[in-house]
Amino acid sequence: MNEVRIDKWMWATRIFKTRTIAADACKKGRVAVGGVNVKPSRMIKVGDVIAVRKPPITFSFKVLALSEQRMGAKLVPGFLENVTTEDQYEILKMNHMSGFINRARGLGRPTKKERRDLEQFTGSESVDWSDFDLDSFFDSDFEEDSDENQDSSKQ
Image (cartoon, rainbow, N blue to C red):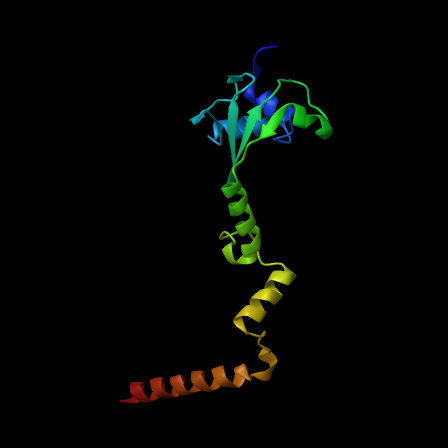
């Protein structure tokens, strides 16, 4: 076996959980060999360096051996070498430290812990609306407006 499809190899070496996910990553341009985006059917050989972009970082793997069969996690180091640079891991570390502050828009509401941290950071406490008599406030505004309208219609 001199060459293997890249989607099969990434699935076999547990870079991706399923072969379908590996193929989709290739189709979306998240997998590159030699700086060139590849299709799932691209054949790889020993010595190739594969760059896999899993936001926020790009992992790099050197192919040490080929396999089309899924293997146990203990066997993976014999088939690939992680050559990801340290600056990529720094980006990952900074992303974990930033927490909820850099949450992408639309990813759901904050967790209980994040909400408490946010309230502590902003110094805002939740408002107890039962302390306000809003009904009488809105009723009096409405009555004043209607009185003014009646007065202006009489003139």
